[in-house]
Length: 110
Length: 117
Image (tube, rainbow over all chains, first blue to last red; front, side):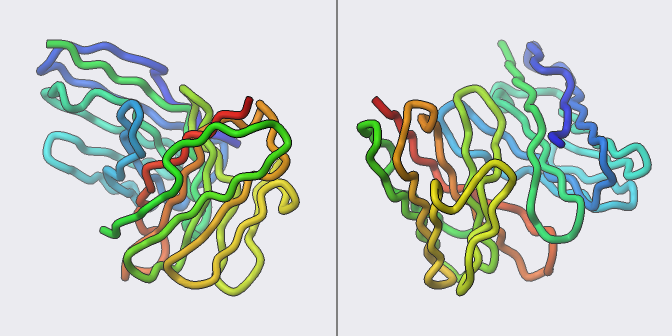
């Protein structure tokens, strides 16, 4: 079953913060996050393994709560380059097959 | 990360014909995947391309419609057979790269934009 992301879409001004959530109805082994700009391929951002770890990548970080089967992506002091559609990809086992979430369209305006 | 070349980048095809999409990687990879993405939608996994054995298809996708080849660790093809307008979509290959074993990042080719008339 496809993970559900929220919000579906969000518009922010440059410098504002955003949180994107990813919820699964099934137990997860790992969560991946990707960003896709219009007309381009998805680009890998980060991966989180079960254990409740949090990772950071410049001003983008994420957390994974395996008990709640949820992950959140945090974007701080957003930049214009952050615009795009964000997808979580979930793996139930360590077999690398991913099920992608419904997607969140993020628009950053000056 | 690897360089992934996907061909063709786009095509317009007639109903009832077939098209083969190629995915070439500049290094040997264990896992290769094929996805479909409808405009404005998420990615749906079609199958995992296994080297030396038959591909593993996801629910709703069958080998007769989407035959896949994986002759070696750097190359795979996806054929979309007997196409209908419902097959109009973006088809993406991805590879899983990393020395850490399971759950490595996936890296995507640029995709093939397919339109069926």
